[in-house]
Length: 344
Picture 1 (cartoon, one colour):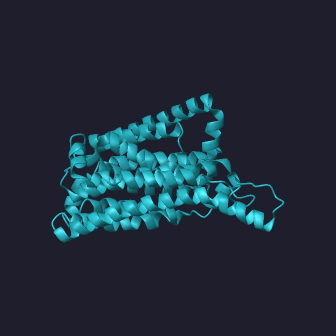
Picture 2 (cartoon, rainbow, N blue to C red; picture 1 turned 30 degrees about the vertical axis):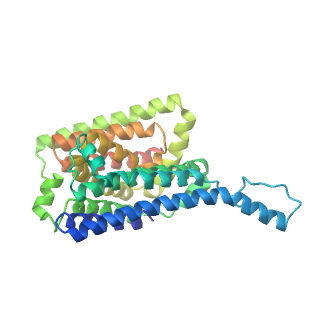
Picture 3 (tube, one colour; picture 1 turned 60 degrees about the vertical axis):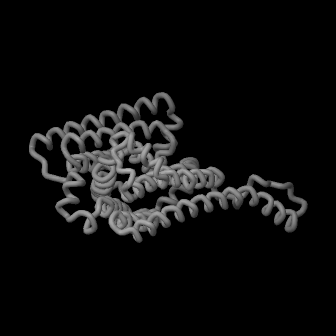
């Protein structure tokens, strides 16, 4: 499902680059962004209305079929099916649909240009800003579902058990393609220019050693955050940790560790550090990177993830995106290997 959402974003990124020079394409892209915003807003509103109406509809059905039953308006789903807070999902969609209109306003983009290095007249930068809102909105809409998964292990196993290595590779490829198309491949830039724009290049031995040291530091930060969290909130730590292990369980093997490492390392680093960071800056890009990991819910895990993402941003600036890819891949690989052979 996530891939089906990402593919239209790639097409939109291509059209946005084409629209930098073609007025017709520019107007079409702006219309598509506005229409998408409206669609998200309406979907959220309908979901909110449905949440309000569903108890009344169910109560009427209960009274018609079994009038002797006491009303159970809160029981919206059959027994055994987890209760998802669809009201929060709808609210997140409405918020996202409204907020995503703001980057379409020229004066808002001019204000943003004072804070981050974007061109307020660039359609590509406008589109990237709207996409950033979508990413945040997707996280807000996903959190209620993640909370349900964390509370119901059986439901989580059923929902996440279908994931395979091909799904992870596919997501990484889509992220990489979005980054490459987003910076204008075959529209505004050739391959050489894209490589330079994404800051992908070779590494010297000294830079490899520096990257290895950075990997050790980031792992230490992650361990420290986890230990502090485990000490202060053991129940919350076990809750989110259990969901993470459920999510990662299909990949607990050497091949799975390589897959999780390389797919995320290549795809996420090309997109966030390679494509977005030069325009959004290291702090905002790290926030977007953190929000992309909705599986951690709103928990202290996000603090560790933010620090790791910030470290990867520094690596990108100090060396290049290739170094960030290697560090990210190594970080994920070692985490999965520890879970595979260390028993969590």
